Image (cartoon, rainbow, N blue to C red; front, side, top):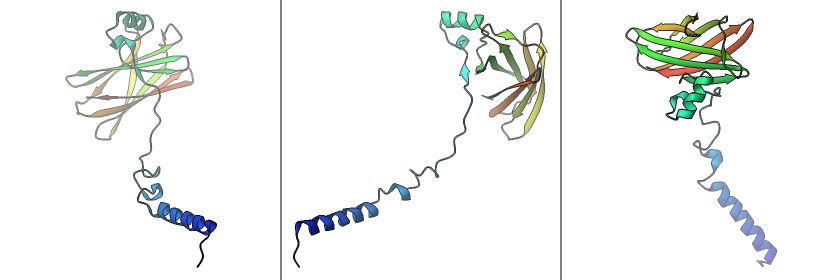
Length: 170
């Protein structure tokens, strides 16, 4: 059999294709690199920590003038939502700041409900009451279970729904 240049190139190409298809680096068969094998990711709202938590004096002064309380913050359109939690002997104190505009004016007339998922997966619904003196909504979550808590704060401001998702650990 006589081999010319084009036959050698053809056989070499077929050999390389065969080696590439049989290699152990084939990503189609590697479950670790398959997009279907990775866990689905959940898109979370923008949650930040208020500048009041930093030790920087200027950031703290700015936070004081713009409603920062040192909690988890969600900016939703013209609304500023902020959650601050604190441990108590028989539960968790929940403070929710619902504010509007660049000056973060408190919104006292909203209907605010907290849907809480406890560490064991059970759920509680808390009606949050507005404190005129403190200019925020508040509730006590009874219980002292250790673990991660997820909160959905549902706010109805004269028919407009403004919601935020937060979490905390106890």
